[in-house]
Length: 276
Image 1 (cartoon, rainbow, N blue to C red):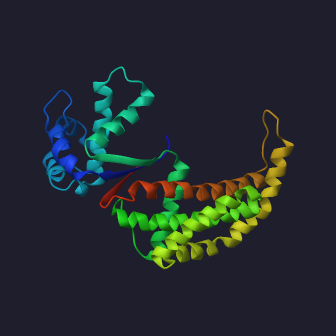
Image 2: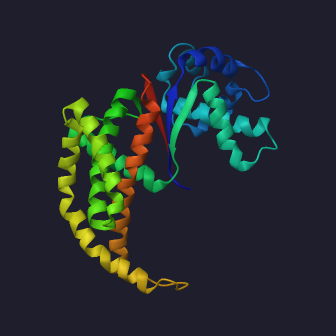
């Protein structure tokens, strides 16, 4: 099973009125009973009263374990209350239901590589800034990191357009990326861009070498195009892995842009749930 990463924001007023009432209901699939029966699935002993007090007061204080318990309960609740629901509809229905009760799962990563590259960039950012963005963080903290990601992945995309794709069709994309970076620079005195450029400088030699080696892989692919199966030599396989990693990291540019768009008008806590 692939790793997944979920991003939550909260509507405190809806949680106080609607979610509080729902979790306290004593029906055939109550949250209190679910919590009692599933304590062993959580790292810490979760207390029903503690959770309801946070929902009534400040839901953003929920721990990741407590939020996981609510997430999993909503998921099972969707299944139990909708026995004829199609499997592929369960997640969408669950997310919609949670949002209606103040728990807004506004973004998710669904592949292991995407999650790991994201955390790789987060680890670099933490080291560069000498801070640690916790699983529960303010929207301003996450927004700062996303500025760094846009600058880093934006510059990496421009590099790929120049040395990998080598097409004038990417000129418009490069201009759009430059404008995004300029907008960030104008609001941050180029702080995030400078961090990104310093980190990219560390991998410059590796990236340049990879681009010089990639033509061997492309030539091999072309020579074997149309064959039902073939085995790539280990040397080329390692180059292909490097090629894939650089491209995948660059693609996080679009992820960061989407995440920023989701939180631009939100001033509150964001919690990440990481599923291994």
